[in-house]
Image (cartoon, rainbow, N blue to C red; front, side, top):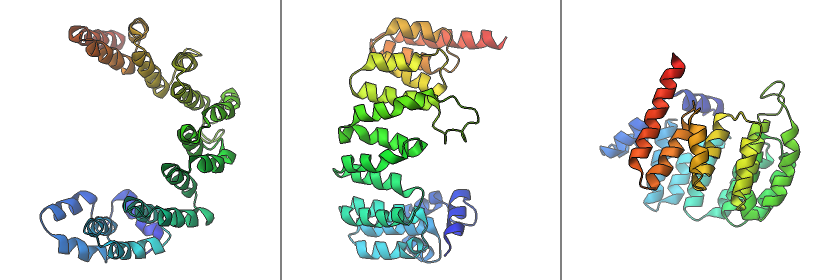
Length: 276
């Protein structure tokens, strides 16, 4: 087996048995076929067979099924083994195999490792490991996700504030994908967790024009705050549809189903008018 070949087949679904077919084979009782193909380099069969063995209490055999795949260094197989170990309560082993890949320099291992630590009471340690990588998009998002459990929300926000000064000149290369709007959204997430929802709303609306992701977050906060007037005003010029969705949700929650329907009808008229 070769990690590059496994990765290519998994991503492109070429030259392999797709997971949907594997599920159908198991549903129809063709367990022997799945077991046989698992030993012939069919990753989806191997993963399904390993999970089934684990459910039957045959954990050692399950790990043996995945050993040839993991031995290639293929990250997907490492994650699958770690997930199984964690699900079986063998957390220490899951941490150990992930740590080994992190030490070997795998680019995706640090995020997985730190999230695994955080799930098992080691969030502060995970936060400290991620802190030097502030500015790398996925690791910065992970840092924000883990900050609350680590009791370091305010520190995370303070670390992010200087990054809001960046103006993209060659996205995503100039900022590794961590553009100003994404940073603002992350700070707003922290402020919301801290109960400072009005501040989060103000952050997201600062500057007027919002990307869709921030607009969805902003509208969701307005709805949670019950700010019906603000939602109505924003919905009048909402081409994305996300504000209208939140407005309709809030109206329905308040028992105004007709109002929710009217909001969608108004949005349809606005879009149609804009198309003309």
